[in-house]
Length: 120
Image (cartoon, rainbow, N blue to C red):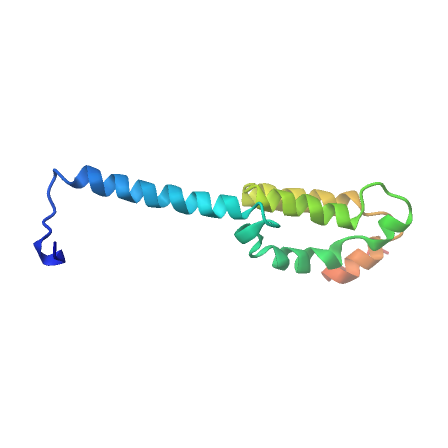
């Protein structure tokens, strides 16, 4: 049947809706199943988060024996990213994890990296 012969009728609308729904379900399944292979397509964009947050992670906190170090922060943020956590919640989690690692020993370094003048 040629395209110009196809008439949009109310009788066929159910088929169009079913076809669109089937296509959406197939696309969702493809994206979701790609997560099994190292995160799949869901990894896109996370490298920018890693590049932005790495300079802010207190390196000194790992040296003083803190149980939750910079690598754990990245792993936590990646898990939140892959699982589709809301953007505002991801930002709040990142801020909390950075604050959790701030110590008097590394506060000046963190202030310099963010452009905030240190307290006298």
